[in-house]
Length: 203
Image (cartoon, rainbow, N blue to C red):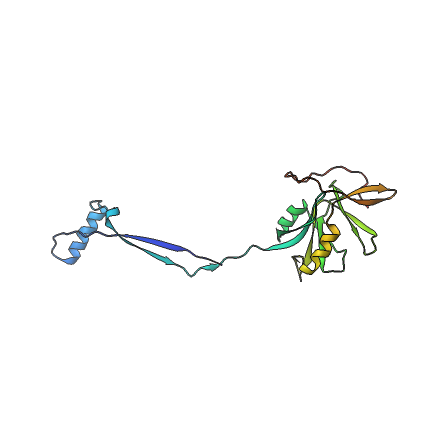
């Protein structure tokens, strides 16, 4: 896809008869008359229109990536987000932190201060044996890893992580730890996620 600048040139034309000693004198007389507004062209003098364009330039596509978005109280879902730092910060509600819990080339990107600023506990991260490794507070997303940057979550890994984080969870305090309990999703709200003060959030 290219972007072009197209120029539209509309031509007005009128023939004026004058008496003069030479061609140059005639041209000068008509030029003076036009400059002094003695000759005013209007729609009746329309003679045609021409269109011209430059060679165009390629439109730079905005860099986006497809990620698994996981919000507290909601089903996880694949969505497209902008790949810039500020956009990722907007998704998680603050400075980002990337965690690498899994053997696959993926990252879990969350709010760096999610637990400390009182964001709602979201999902438990477990190892292959079902042992809880951590609890993520606030919205996070799962994305792929490129050579230098985050990328779209590769199709071959989507099913695994959609299943892993699909259902929202609540957390029950059990001694020094927590138990993750699957729950029904909350009704979607248009309001932004607000931190709630909860004691003992850190796993």
